[in-house]
Amino acid sequence: MIPTLPGRYQTRIFLIVVIGSLWTLIIAPFLPSAGKEKFTDLYPATFLILAIVLVLGLILWEWFWYILQLTRWEKDWPSMFFLFQLIPEAILAWYVFKEVAEQIELVSPATRTTYIWHIVTTWIVIWLFVLGPIKIFFVRWRLHGGRIIL
Image 1: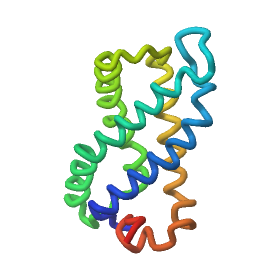
Image 2 (image 1 turned 90 degrees about the horizontal axis):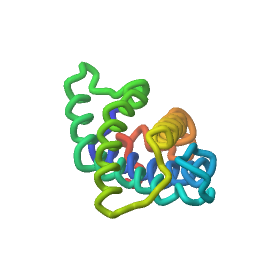
Image 3 (image 1 turned 90 degrees about the vertical axis):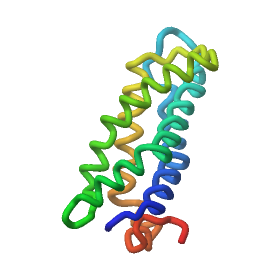
């Protein structure tokens, strides 16, 4: 599949909003935190992280990855590239998260370890979903450049 820019946008929105949110609902109570809080105390921070990854992805990263993809000979985007996108995106999202959390005075037990566990496991779940189930639930997804809505 050769993803188009609108397809990349639609796929990112779907994966983060649906798959990432479902995974966050499941994993947040089990993430390491700074103290002995209620299991629901990490939800605001983890969903803020998802929102930051989504916004940064739509504003910055999808353009960057798309332009980089166009420099490749076959104009494709192998699945391992999708997996390794995590590294620069997670680093930038961490710094933005710290700034935003400070600005909105989000008191959260989320630590760097919490962030790493959350972002890595969420990204792996999303990556695994792209490797298989998305092709089952959205049959035309790969034929229409990654667009979910035609």
